[in-house]
Length: 246
Image (tube, rainbow, N blue to C red; front, side, top):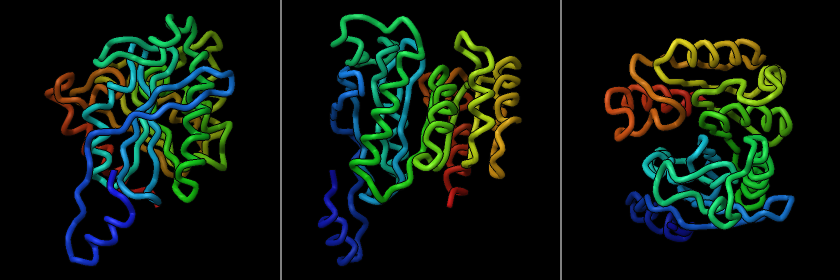
């Protein structure tokens, strides 16, 4: 991690401080006492914090190549292991490993996301907080943004859908989200339609849907190893949205 003193020192010398790309391990407890394992990537103390949540069967390693790029763009990032996840990417999900089981419901991950928001407010009290979700967590970020209207400054959702027993839950939450919203999806008509339907009810003035010509499910669409034909174009859309935020 580059300290504030180092940033000031390099700036005084007319130099650009080195930006670390390997995140540091952190852990914190959810409200129900479950320990959430995460990795933090720091750019600058007061820079916006992007909270990164993974897809089903996955973990924070989904963001191993994504979070460092966000740091280079000037954002802090925290990628967590939700209790609903697995070993899609390596190293595998530590929260699931320490629990000894995968949570039976995607909704069980809500306390983990709540804990990440609390962490960001505690560690970066002057920073804007952006929620970034992938697949089932792309749906949950609308729910959490609706619950925390004064804490969340933007939402990015990759392949959102109604993945829960209540098939209106995400739309109901999206109707309460007034912060800027970006949605992306695989180059799949069903995913594109799901994202469009959710975004349509968002009352925010600033909302963007990127419809890819090449793309895969969830945040993996930004990984060249998963989406070699579409990663660059998807990244361009994400960067344009992030740069448009106040």
